Image 1: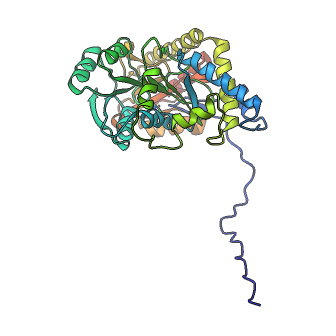
Image 2: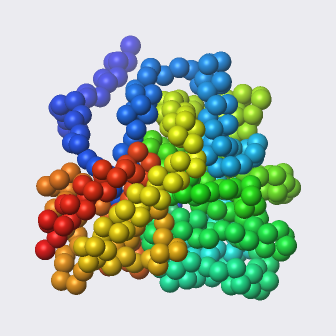
Amino acid sequence: MPPLPVPPSVNSAHRLALDPIATPERLLLGPGPSNAHPTVLQALARMPIGHLDPLYIDLMGEVQELLRYAWQTDNRLTIPMSGTGSAAMEATLANTIEPGDKVLVAVMGYFGQRLVDMAGRYRAEVVTIERPWGEAFDLAEIEAALIAHKPAILAMVHAETSTGVCQPMEGIGDLCRQHDCLLLLDTVTSLGAVPLHIDAWKVDLAYSCSQKGLSCPPGLGPFTMGPRAEAKLAARSGKVPNWYLDVSLLNKYWGSDRVYHHTAPVNMNFGMREALRLLAEEGLEAAWARHRGNAERLWAGLERLGLELHVSEPLRLATLTTVRIPEGVDGKAFSRHLLDRFGIEVGGGLGDLAGKVWRIGLMGYNSTPENVDRLLAIVESELP
Ligand code: PLP
């Protein structure tokens, strides 16, 4: 008889002996994630149930319905993608772009550039219009670009987290209908916090995240698709070139068939349900007014301290404020000091604004007058 094979011995080189996880208290006043609401954390910590359990199926319906409320849409295809905001972003593009489609991206910051990159990967012919970082587009330039390029899709960012600009949306959807083009909108930093009307604005595709205005940890990417975008998906000549994000497959799980696609992150959806329940309890108008009021308190306080805000008042985003770093101050060292000494996170600049601004977020659970006053007092005492 041949000798039995000797199993390999276990290599313990990577076997760390760790203590259970312990994280410090942080107040996350940067570009996201934001602190999660305590009852959302309780929901996340519940024992999982099966992702085809009838109770979970009921919960899926509740999450979809509350997302429709948050987005102000009746769209049937409204679901949380299992992934972060970028997964939902990719889903909007992957499902609607066919190779060679012209996609016009209105770029006014870092996340517009990400849309350009992603759309190109799905073999769109990408064209762009651009604004300096800190400005927004007006209707005339959007219309001129629609006429010049005749795109199948116009993609843009509602709340540009890299600049602190809120793009005015009135009229853009009408232009897209006139020029037979889908309107795709990034609402990652606006959902639940800034006025947002998907149906009234005639937005055909939108996506968001869990970790900002919704007061949940990162991990889900809300996605919504209207009838015009559904029609484009149905008319595709080939398969969606991304299995995981294919809405025609996902809809068999989220729609009435309940066919297994992938194992849903059930606990993340427990958290999402609780976050959306809290938003519905507060009411959208109240949540929008709270974010606006606290942002105005921050803006007035920063200006009182002699700091300059990067974005002009009418375009400012309530969830994210860009503050110019004063001459002679080491912006990175100051944010590090806030984190080390006070446990407060504020963000630095991205892309064109790297080294030039701090980014202060007031999102979801963190948008309170107490947080604004605490930050202002610390900035006043600590800024050199
Ligand atoms: N779009 C915008 C405007 C964002 O701010 C972000 C993230 O901050 C994303 C997209 C990507 O989302 P995520 O980081 O959750 O993948």
